[in-house]
Length: 83
Length: 476
Image (cartoon, rainbow over all chains, first blue to last red; front, side):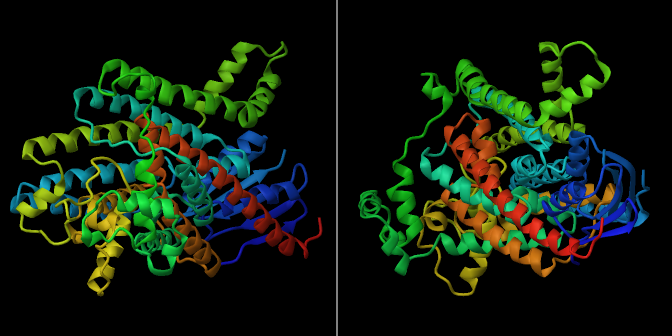
């Protein structure tokens, strides 16, 4: 499946990197967060477990907040708010 | 927390039960199989630890350079220090199975090639094993690529002999290896016998004039000077460049006074404890790695052997032994050689005469993968990772896309070549050697860091290009 990055509504974005392995999910997440505005929320969907640790640590390092974490059948669905 | 489905629990139990059954039945058949089972269960533990801590050497420097995350470098350094600590004990008992490797520029070049490969592939050699246990098809493809590349690379001759410097040929011929090896034909043979074997073996204990089996040699020379000091220095650089800014930002939010040295120490410690999961995995991994040496050497003493080849011979399995009667039996965690062996064995069955080289013919043999001790370790590692993934609801069968398949094959091939040039991968050439105070481990590691940097630079360009296409249709 190809990577998908789209705007859902104003200030709400979706990044779907399902099927991708390291390092793609974390690099795409970093770049997507760089593209959106402060206060915007991006929903990141991925299914590579090791990326979860890296994305969480990356958000903590930069100061972005992971506002919601869901896990559905091996899929991680996280909402990240850009600070 | 998501509940673990019943079927996952049943699968986890079935996998564990399968390994228990293998160990029990083979032991009932012949007690020597306990030697192979020791490899098996350490592999199982490694798999569980790696999956639990998402412990991947590739992510250590890649994630640092790509997204500024230091957690894996920290985890690896913790594991290395603990492994080194346990190994120091094993060394002073005289039960260490470790053999230091020749140190030289070749280790750094090998590490560089390996480092680029692991970023392209999405995981290092051990990381690809545990990710295969998570059901990841890309990782399985990486394993195949590493295995096939190595099996071919160690036996290339013909035109490739033209690339061998005359000095290597001369030095290799002077080693008087058995005629069956035909050392003058084969790039790897002349590289090994004509170049690598002429490099010095350097351990930190030796540099300080100490015996590595003495208490001061093992604990001060190899552990403190060879591992703790460089690891602390490396982590200090990581803290100053990547972690400090973020930590101090958080401190300033709650503290009005000026930042002092106490805050800096607290920041350094907070970086080390930032990923509990990785740190715990590192702790268990380090201890298990040291214990494996102790257990394997203990079994060798019990059975009066120096290598598993003797045990296989006693059990009637004398096919695939090297000309010295040995098989690959490192006595500690290793990944890539057994991968080369199983494909090499298949190639041989298909008619390729590939025992006329040093790698298979003299050192490692080509035993049937079903009775290859190190293969038992790798298969069980995949199994252990699968059990852990199933129990944390992270097991998912994933087919590789065409894009990822291409990266997996290229990355795997580079790792295969790097492994053979460096006489090991991120585990055998870096983790184990560094932990044992072997200078060549750090030389390989330096190359890996450089390779990871190059790989990240490339992927940054690649993802930017793809994001630009996706974003062309977006309005902000």
